Amino acid sequence: MGRVKQHDEQVRERLLLEAGRLLSAEGVAALTLRRVAALAGTSTTAVYYLFGDKDRLLAAMHAEGFEALGQALNRARGATPLERLGALGLAYRRAALARPHLYGLMFGGMAPDVVVDERATNGAFAPLVQAVEACLAAGELAGDDAETIARYLWAVSHGWVSLEFAGLITGGERRRAAAYRDALLRSVIGFLPGEF
Image (tube, rainbow, N blue to C red; front, side, top):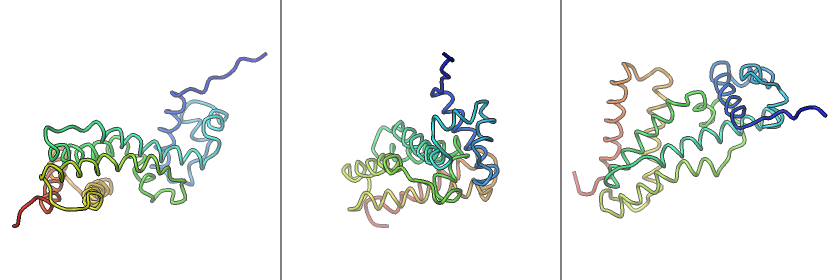
């Protein structure tokens, strides 16, 4: 009897990483199971065993990106609800920069027909909604719809990071990070209690 080949979590992670890099560098047409397996140093059998086919590999990459984003946002902390909201904004950018190879897939451009894991996407959005709800409850923000405010703030973060990936935000990392912080602050100002 032949030895059973192990296709473990490390192989899965390598495959997801290499598939993301290939997708980012060359697009969805270049993403073949044979190439991904070769880049990950394994066999196409491992890809079939762990994912099934190319569509399921793309779906796993999509879910992986949103799960990692959700985990990063859940780790964000602040002394007050408003400080936590700011920490979430910073965590969003860090998470995106840590996985640039998945960002285009996560937000629809690279493989528009990818199967969306709603649990993963909702899980990434939930910490932001919860933080806005906490700010509203504490009187640190004004408004009556936490989800709408959260979508607005997400749009600012997403738009900024997308522009940064497109090379339209210039300067070194320090300058880009400082400008992003400023954009976050300005996006929250409109929801502060009181009149201007």
